[in-house]
Image: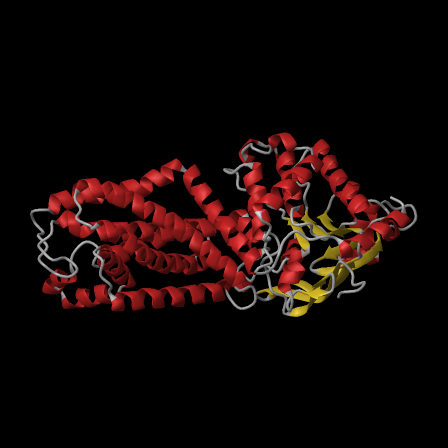
Length: 293
Length: 248
């Protein structure tokens, strides 16, 4: 290579036209790309789509049918009459999908970190918290697709949700998805390796799901144990379920909304700190193989 | 704006993992339009240095600037000028070549229309235009690497970092990749920092920095690192030998 050519070429980058833009429009393009990738990956993995759908359907078709006669659910808001147990569990199962999805996204964050595609995301020029937010929104989009696919099947089974309820529940699903996704995002910063994920299942997903209002009304739990009742009341998952349940029946639950939004913000904030290269766990987490102690 | 600031300036950078210093007082620069080699044995701190430059780790000690934009104060401007090929494979194997490249374009705020034009141009450049719609898992190791290079260039970066890009590739693929990157330096004035421990990839006229145990032990023109009669490989072995043996 001749040196005059190098010098001439070296002067060029200064005038080079850059393609990307760093403003709000650029960020929306970036957000769109992240959401699109998540959806493409989701639809590429057919088994993931079906297992996400089968899990709640098994609950609905088998578990709920079995308990139909044992557990009558008496009148309590938002229901205006006695409801069948199958009708009662539908909202809880829809939010369960989001719970699993939130943890699944967290799992894929850990996987992304192991295979390195997280590095690709984090070298995007947008501020890191906006990238995490985009990642969160991408996961929530997938969870909403799954939840509505389930509601569509449940509609033909046993359901008395008013047509407008499906629309009214969209913001509720968005909020509950953001909350569960933010919890997953925060957990993903704590989990060092993929193998540790089984403990997330045992210690997060199952307790959150069972100690909630998803499967049984809380007054029923109170009859058997006051302590358990309070645990369920303090469980943010209960509030996510109630928010969605009320919204599906065209009612608004302000306390549930406040708890869900507050929990989402708190966990997202912690995740941002945990992923900050300077302050959080990324700094303390091991470096590349061979260069760490 | 940044005037004649070098493409990359690293000054006094240190990084620790717990008690162990992975980098200590590292200073180096990549001049505009130059091909610079970062040499070092495994575990020398090359990947850690790359992680600091790409802001995956925060450098509390020292300063990193890309075309004069300090990484800590102007991270967006700095990262927008930077393209990276990581050591590990980072393509989504379930997605097609084009989907992977579009995703990257979006990450840099490039809309799909403009991105498609640029992607066609780059796939042509790396000789893989016909693989545009194929899933990445059907590509060979060398082809994936070429796609990763194309991806790193989508947003027209002015500085390209490559962390041992030819590791695990056969001789022919390795030569292809070196040729592609050298052509970019020659034709487009791209500045390159190329981490490697394969000496055949380096020309005597390249700039070179030798990293050993987290410290810079030599830097200058690659050809000048060797003493008379010494090959670059000999010089490298001498430079990274244990201090006791080096004195001999």
